[in-house]
Amino acid sequence: MDLVERFLGYVALDTCSDENSETCPSTEHQFELAKLLSKQLREMGALNVLVDEHCYVYAEIPANTEGQPVIGLISHMDVVDSVPSAGIRPRVFTYQGGDILLNAEKGIVMREKDNPRLLSQVGHRLIVTDGTTLLGADDKAGVAEIMALAEYLLTHPEFPHGTVKIGFTPDEEIGRGADLFDVQGFGADFAYTVDGNVSSGIEAENFNAAAAVVTVHGYNVHPGSAKGKMRNALKIAMKFDSLLPPHEVPEATEGREGFFHLNGLNGAEETAVLRYIIRDHDEEKFEQKKETLKRIAAFINETEGRGTVEVSIRDQYRNMRQVMESHPEAVERAEAAIRAVGLTPEHIPVRGGTDGARLCYMGLPCPNLGTGGNNYHGCHEYVSVDEMYQVVDILKEIVRAK
Image 1: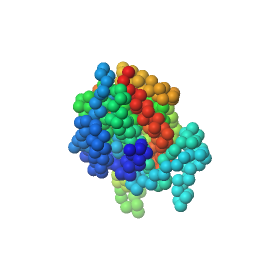
Image 2: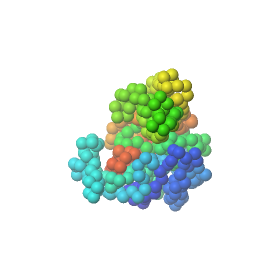
Image 3: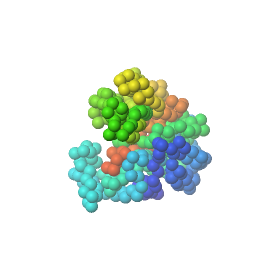
Image 4: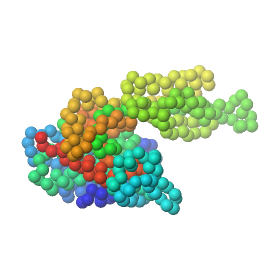
């Protein structure tokens, strides 16, 4: 099956996860893709194909060359639910430069000036949406690339390789993709998540991450008799957010700079809830950010009354850098593979996280590789077909017997 055909088949399935769900998987429709992938893997001839009760997919391609490390390849099946993810209408075309008209009826245009990577993709085949949904390249591009590699290995027995383990996870987009991953059963010496952007990218460091919920308790009375009585939880919530460092937000930071990101605010006069994600590459600064939230809560409780604000903070994942520095073989192998296909490796600090960040601390060294995708989590998401094929070639070189 052609790589593009695979990808288009996968994005046709709505697999958004749901952070408000307490089940695993968080949404039942993720099983639809899991079952399709397991069926295709069996038809290819992969061994030990399994979809477990929590929607994790596992498979194995047996070695045809002895003395090789067992290498794992992992991607996630879910997409974010913050952007429409159903009824995706993809379009494949050859990019000739300039702005891209995504939707003539709605006047939706992707501007070249806002997407500098387009300058290096003139002549590439691109896959875009109609501007009303995401595309799902995060991470169905990675899924398609791993599946294309599996098909190649299983139909080219002359290509020398060790054992390759394949894993597809649910719920990565809500930070739970590695929660129930069977590291011991997977049995890889090291692995790669295929979940990045540029095809030549290697990501072996990432944000430390936490999620915070700030609950504000107000006091509501009829506005006609509110003088001296009402404490409006919404206004107190606005005050809380205003006390955070204004320059430490996603829209004002880059590289290894951390941030507070307000990604949810709801409530009324009686109760309001703010939801934040906290990110920083530096562990000390990360801990300081968590303390900042607590200090602001203490200040407001002093000025507005005890118990006005409650803060709950949950750590999500840690920077994989410390683990990867102790296991350089995975990064070195990826560097050599990228050079072998004629590209220059780009070491990129991840301004986010992957399943690999969690898996590193579960005993499986797991840097992240690119997919060729761009503008993840938005309606201007797109992927370069040319870069997707480059990624498949890089994966071949990674698993090639040395």
